[in-house]
Image (cartoon, rainbow, N blue to C red):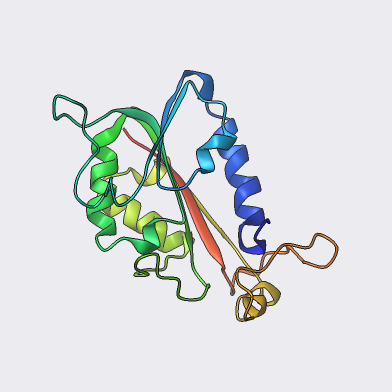
Length: 186
């Protein structure tokens, strides 16, 4: 099932990420399995609760922060108790010039897994990344949504399944459903 909430985000984000030299990149993902869509040099998943990005960077056997060229977090940040601290930990794990891609909901129902703490627009997400230490000119942030999708998010069956024959993907800047960003370190 493809969620209506993620169609535009997936298309745009895949374009951004596939423009990177993935074949030369070590990729890590914080929970999820979005990175399986990418043909990277290497790919590792760090799943909560065994790995909690709020507690610190993921460490190697010598106790040093693991280093990656790209770190992914799809629909994770809204569940974190300490999203700013988690971003600082991501920065510690990125090689110079490395990238962090993050996608978050904005207008969706409460969904505790195990917690549901925060929502960000594209601007709010960019501001959070800047505060954590990413340079403003090295962040791309976007959001998407519309009234019809917002209404479907209120239906009992959630998330709404995308129907290409009936769902309108036109963006309405007054009804963001989700936001995403790609930020580069350095």
